[in-house]
Length: 381
Image (cartoon, rainbow, N blue to C red; front, side, top):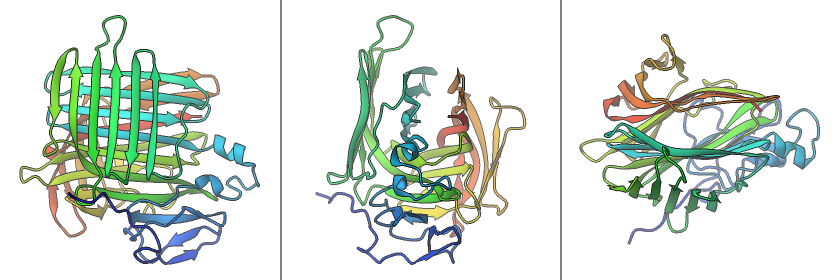
């Protein structure tokens, strides 16, 4: 039997090189802008200073809460907590189905959401439920966690167990009234070393403020049943991406993002993550990555343009010839809320891609086999 995933930690396979910048933030190997820098640190905050950089694997603790003076003043811990937005999100799918599930905590507002897009049958199922205040408590470590809700006829949970090398996504909805579809989803993701690939980042948003993310590409298997019709996910064709995320985002949060994945006829797994966000100095600090099999390649900063609106094709390009994509939205996935001092304007369609991605080694990837989603996210929270 294969051993569970072993996640490199700083000090276990070579401590990363560190220096500091003018704000006191710790930099990981700053001579290599944009590159993956090796083993993740034990903690993302050391002696009150952020550790900025990008790494393969996951950090021991994503302890952004421990940073000193994130807003120029020595704020008490409970006030720092209110400004950290956190979420865990999963995108999963095979050639016939795409799934997006998220547990989101903005402290003043929380949300549990799951959307299932039957690509073959052109039908959608899922639910979205919001809660006032804080509903979810995300741990600093990904080693072992289970987060979710169970309210009446709805359930959504994401559980991670690094020791056993697995992650589980469970969701169900049995509505009392039509027309909402009933569904039952049970997927298991393979986190073992030979099956999955992870990278993590801690990127600057401002003075003593940063965002953290770990993203893991992995095969998945299981089943989904919609209105009594059952289908099976097979690991040789199904993939998932976990995003574990925390950030001292500003009151007005904005970013553009696309992600996609797929399995080539040879069985090789492909995935990508591309973001244009509020991170400072994106040539040096970004989370743009390309998975090719078990390898992870850095990509340059990108721009996303929508010349004919959100429902028409999106253009995603860089300035170095490594990213040249068109995203074709197929089904909308939008959220709009007006809550006085808090607003949500979120556009996140699912769709297919065309064009190409080029790795740092020069390999060209045909994006027409990849499927995923895009986001234009604007929050005032």
